[in-house]
Length: 586
Image (cartoon, rainbow, N blue to C red; front, side):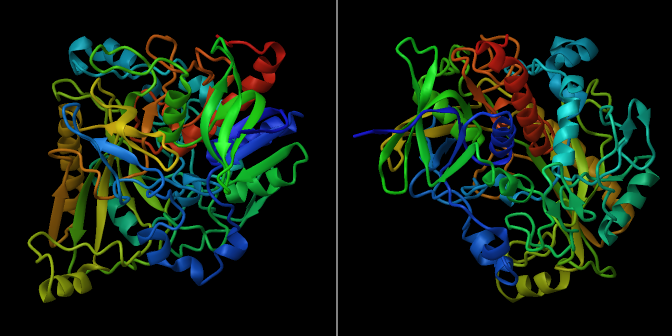
């Protein structure tokens, strides 16, 4: 028997980066809001007190704060003619499952996307012609420009206390920042990080090539900061244990530190944890949502009626809920028709690891967003004529902290086990660092998400199936740009180097990044996008779908800043436009 609850104005699925912002903004507007989060509530002040927070086995290896794969996972295959199998252990990425979601586990890098990222197809056609775009590439423009999203980037950066240096302030290039970024309306709310020893070596080498290094924007506080919700964060102490961990000193911005404490005090808001939403309920015409159905911690099936339904969970969950609920036409790769599941994408990583005999780096000093970067090879910042690919990467030295169980780099030729391996780990743990090529990834007809026909979750519902492999565009891009990183690395003078661009098939086993995108993409054409520029479903206008699931292809830049900006955009669009007429905004 389904228990039907008292109706509310808004139900928000997911209490992560996007969901918490939307809940707070709509509650402030006077709406009765219920937030549903399938994970547990955590309290950084008590659950993650020193020294327990520094338990690498618990949080990084045994994944205490991530999804329980025995109850729900994804299935994966490289190609349509293969049988997908369930992911039984986290490898390439980790899916957060707690209040705050993946925003609790992130390292803090808070990029804006380049203007090119929002108009990839049209700008490529204008500059290079249609021959430059791979034949099976389905990348497209977002339906929104960088200039339209800029005020919301600014809003999110001040909410999360991002530290950085503007490179383009109202159209004027500024020394010390990223000269390739889109114009910003004001400076970052906090100053940039100070570079580490490894970052300084990289910066000097990059400058010798004429490149312009800068400190990456980070949500690890560079000084004590009070945000617009009157919540205060302390200064980052560079103590490591950042990515995959909750910050012990309260210096990393996350939903738990920037929004949730203020949100929980709001009289118009109620948070329900351990609430796993399994369906968006539609009326008889299937043109309007009437609420959601979820399973609570006791196994009861509950129905929460609402006038407005907002899906604000992770890429896979947003897409899966739309498919399970019959919102939008499922994507069919054979005909290249349909929209839900279309344009799944990832990011393309390459690495050059430098090993030294005469230089020592303190591996334990660092933070997730403590990076020195160059952006000359990102997006379309360089001439692609004759290269055989589109898109690019930023090159970065990231000093994220020791993590001695996770990280033990050794030079090529080192034995995989035994005394020789142990000697190499001891020698190079503090005598090595990497220059990473952090690249974008275009979308393709054969990379997509759908419901698995065989495997089901603990509730008997189909799992989401991921079909993905590298394409020649990304392999060529990775090889070319990783070679540029190797050129810079050689000038630093390492005794040995390991150069690893993307090659072969994509593997879901080794960890890469958490940046899964697409599946419920935004756009200007309902034939090729699931939601419009306001992230409103084309088919069910009182459903909004916020997250990286909206990205038509993936930028080189990490997605969190753009997810946060889109959440701010949606909140304003609902308050300023939707509530006045309760219909499609386009």
